[in-house]
Image 1 (tube, rainbow, N blue to C red):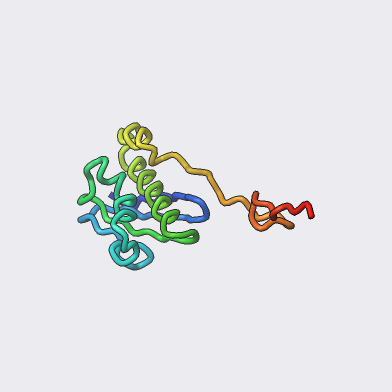
Image 2: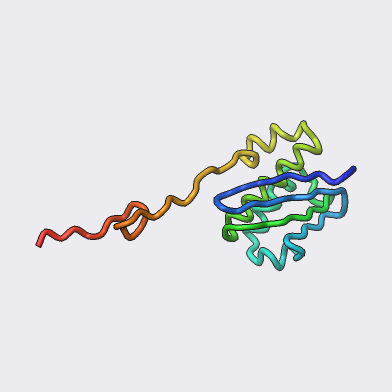
Length: 128
């Protein structure tokens, strides 16, 4: 099997993934997953597509993450891994789609408007 690459996005985070056959190692920005994501919840989010299909020990994953925060990066990486797994085996698409791993979450942060403290929040009105 040659290297399969895929891309995933969430908020302002972008994940580029390269999947090869191996022993289940996940390297993110030249660091191990345990050092890059110290939180067990975020590591679980990243591994969800692999755990769903039961192939966590079958593929080595190298990922480049850019932009966003920890949560957005982990969800972008989950989407990229799911897309790569679909490219490897087309029959897995239905399972991953029903779990929602292939759906792009398009919610972005709304910009701050001038004359207001936040995007929608107005300054307190004072009659006198």
